Image (cartoon, rainbow, N blue to C red):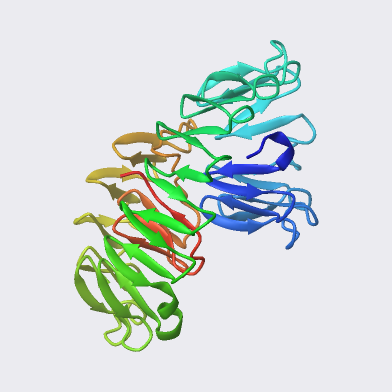
Length: 357
């Protein structure tokens, strides 16, 4: 973060060097844009964990909506672009929608003429002053290297410290990381703290053990799995593999036969009615496209409106994904796991996504 010349960028509290390493974090997934050619060589781009080829097919996924940028001319022919399910013409009118506010980037010179950019309804000049707005806090990235994360001011250049959800982490010298206010050294010993318990991630690779809510489970030998303090044998009893049953919050659910699903102790039939329960709120995903996130009603289909907490995107298409208590979990990608409401990547031990409490 030495400034604009270092090619570094921060994505979700992680520092990424786009030119040297080509690594990029998108929605908690690490993507190497240079080595694999996912971006530069093949014109592919990653949007919310999906690889899209902009030139060959022109398809693009934005907020769970498929947009064809080439065939319909929404992007290339007419200079239109899609932002959160809204079509915007950048050249003709210069209008741009950011966080539900209409901004004219051309007529007023807010973007092209003066190097200004709009972030969450605030005008920021990135070149002249180096100021940037993050969560409505003003940060000067160039002059002093200060950065505001969740209301805390952090100096990323001098001390290498970073704040994640009001927790100070020192990344470079010792590899320490704070999880649940506990200090963990990920590099030296491979230890990891989950809910205040010390876990050795290196032993995990050898023995296939995993810690879930302070309990050690061997996934391969016995097929046992602990969910919310209850022991479930997914292999021997066929609760998962044989019968398509799954355990959610201590309840056995058969996803295929009946379409029922338990979320927070509420029974939901996903197949017959398209209803879904999130935090006790009933949502019909099929009929009207409405979705409730933390008590906010979102219509993804009709209006393209989105109200989220911490920029959570609802993905209704990817069948591998599942929502548990407002958190998206990828059941096939075995690197990801939800432990006490936190998404953790157990294989890439340097990466962790801390959601605000």
